[in-house]
Amino acid sequence: ANSTGPIHIAAALGKYVIGFYPKIPACSPKRWGPYTNKKIIFTPAIECNNCTRKQCEKLNCMNTIDINQVFDSIKKILQHKIAG
Image 1 (cartoon, rainbow, N blue to C red):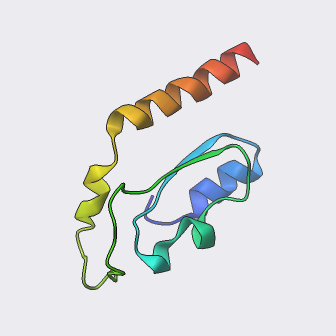
Image 2: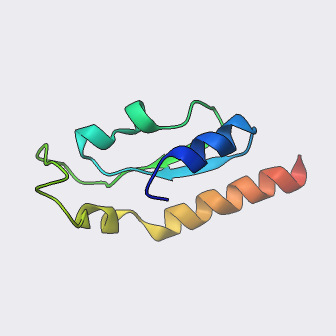
């Protein structure tokens, strides 16, 4: 979603959530992330030069998030839910 609303609703319902946030300070998961312990947050594994959304319109840094790590996280959540 292009808004954090759905992740907050899921967290409020006690669901596990996975969020993706760019390194742009205004989009920080500290500011916009869900308030739950059942979360996995992904951010690009690169240094950011404090760019802004206006400077970095396409958010190419998000392409550096490793899809295998995302997939592994989803598997762990599903395995935990099945076992629990």
